[in-house]
Image (cartoon, rainbow, N blue to C red; front, side):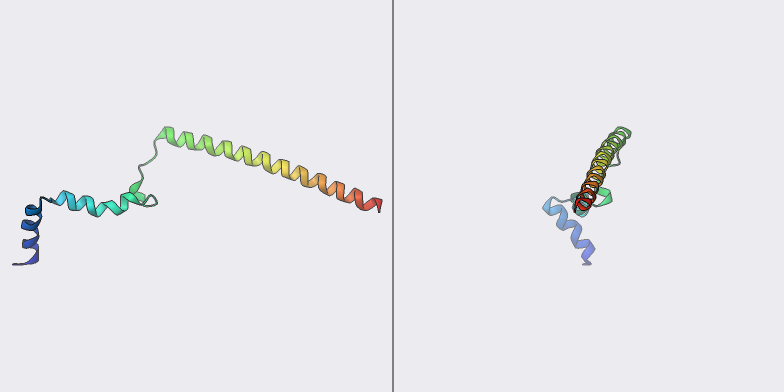
Length: 86
């Protein structure tokens, strides 16, 4: 008996169906988050929320950069002033 003909009766005897096999084949793709099929497409509101979050993060980082540049400028001025005293 060819192998394909033996698989069907075996699966029926064990109470398994082709849908179970299909689910088992898809399981690794659904469990790995980086796999494209494991993620649902984002909705419009999710995209808006993500955009707002990224804009807030960008603004926060810009303020941090501005503050750091200001401190670096003040340090440079202090350093140059200290050199002129010597």
